[in-house]
Image (cartoon, rainbow, N blue to C red; front, top):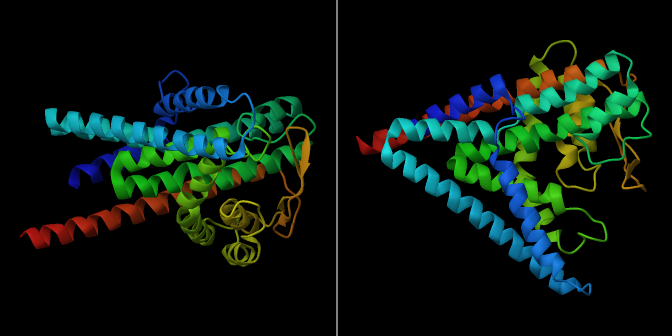
Length: 330
């Protein structure tokens, strides 16, 4: 337990310091490669579309990806801790670092901020297209800013708090299992012709594993809004959250987005284009003021505060469990 706490703390600090350098090999890319190969294997065999068959194949793929992720992660950790406890701590630290995406999320969204600050809208569209799934070619400045803010707000849960909670609970094994689910959803969890049935199991599982973390993330972000300074309104964040947290097709996406909209006093969401098709979405927030590119910097500040609050609470919980275990053992 104490080794886990050390690795959990150091992994978080490494994430804040280094993020995800492009040159560094990342386990999520391996998981993504496995998903792509499994998709090609299953869908490549389908000469005729069959709903039940594709649903079944989607379930098989989820099982294969999760079992492979769990097995490899467990073997690496067991082997390194068996060799030497310090080697085990080092490997668990690196794994924890790679599970979290705090600095990476900030770095990628701030590229959009700097492009808009330099008045280069085409470059801003290109930068935001790297972190969103929507069509960005025709977005105006306001649309680009909203896309970046919504991504940071939603991924505060998906990319930071949820993996942090799962890693605190079950170490890198559970952390990477969560990331595998999240990666499958981002690759095949679309409601389009190709993935409607094949990707349904992955999409539904992602909804399930994010249900509690998304709501915990929302309340952590509300707390951050109260202590984050005059840029944010904690009261408005809570009000908009309670009112608009269901204004999304996903049961989880509007949780942190609604908090963010309320905290900043802006309006998010609305109709969006995906793969050339307009998707109708309700608005989130009241739009007390107009969206501006400085809001990208503000939402990152809010995300970092939320991450620190979550890390501290997780460590306190782990310390409490450790103390209880020691007491019973003593």
